[in-house]
Amino acid sequence: MKCFKSAFVFCFAVVAVMPAFAAEAAPAADAGVNNDKLLYSLGYLMGENVKKQLILDRGEEDSKAISQGMRDAMLDRKPQTDLETYKPLIAKRYEDDAAKKLAARKIEQDKVLQDIKKEKNVKTLPDGMLIRTVKNGKGASPKPTSMVKVHYEGALLDGTVFDSSIKRNAPATFPLNGVIPCWTEGLQKMKAGGKAKLYCPPNTAYGDAQAGLIPPGSLLIFDVELLEVNN
Image 1 (cartoon, rainbow, N blue to C red):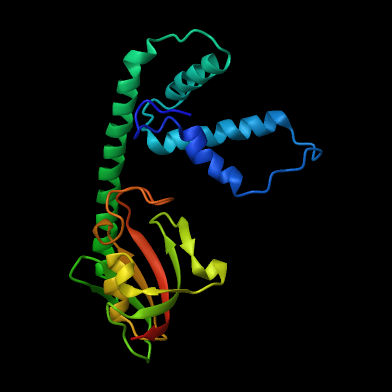
Image 2: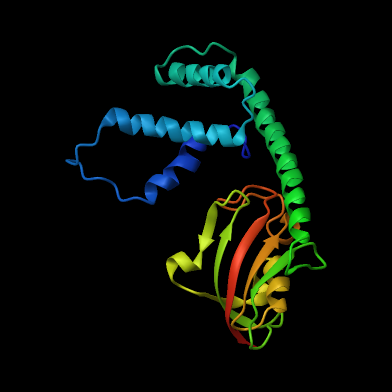
């Protein structure tokens, strides 16, 4: 499937929806799958993806226009617009809406960080990240070159968990200088056996780039337990 612009997300039906399908085992052919419900589910997932990427100011009217375009395409009807004229305009709409969403996300996150700074047991580190001590450890603190073993769970501000060694029941081991700056700095403030919550602004994590399930410019929140330090 081709996109008319590499950064243009109109390939969302494949890019965003198919990985979700791949994560589940395909039902057996005789499982009695309802085709209408299957296709409805596909359409719902596609709609969710559009909503995440575009700002639909008119609500119902915007959804009707998008639905009509999809319906005409699937029924091989002649398009009601000059598609070549609108392709670059659509790409610009995605870019403009992404910039607006990014700006709004940063304003919301900055306010949250300012509020958290006022809470007990929270320290602000030089790069702007925050660390809340949950449990003091008694072992050694790691150096930037240390190998560490940790249990962790990472979430977005809205509570969406994007990674969790806890759920996998598989602690992670890695060199401390091989991860995002927030971890490299934050874990050096901990001791083996300790637990903390790390609040990682975008500049200490993935910046304004999309990273898997993590939207651009996201504040990341990690619950971390430092199990072992090998200096």
